[in-house]
Amino acid sequence: MTSFLSLHFKKAIYRAKHRGGKEADFLLGGFVDTHGPFLDEKELGELNLILEYDDDAIFSWLNLNQKPPVELKTTILKKLRNHVKTVGYQS
Image (cartoon, rainbow, N blue to C red; front, side, top):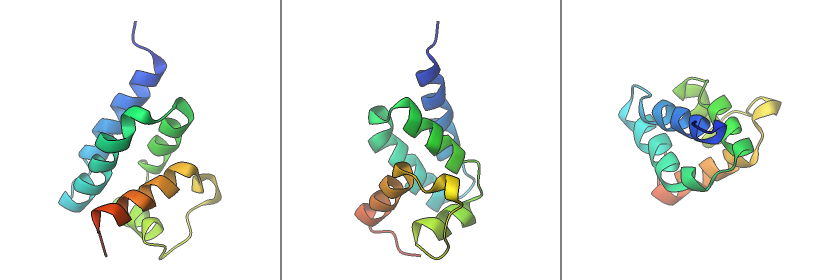
């Protein structure tokens, strides 16, 4: 039987790597590759919630151009922002 955690993880991997744009696939897919195995159930749920939004919205939150909805102000968003800085992405 597959655990709930691994289903959340598989969903996050797929959604992060199949965004439709190279930048998003690189940044979000890279985040999942690097940090995904170390995320707990709560963080994976938060990540999957963020991945429900379109790339433009996500990038505007990551670059601090717009404030994210209150429910997305999470540790995962902070980790994503740090990942974006680490890989040197600038919009």
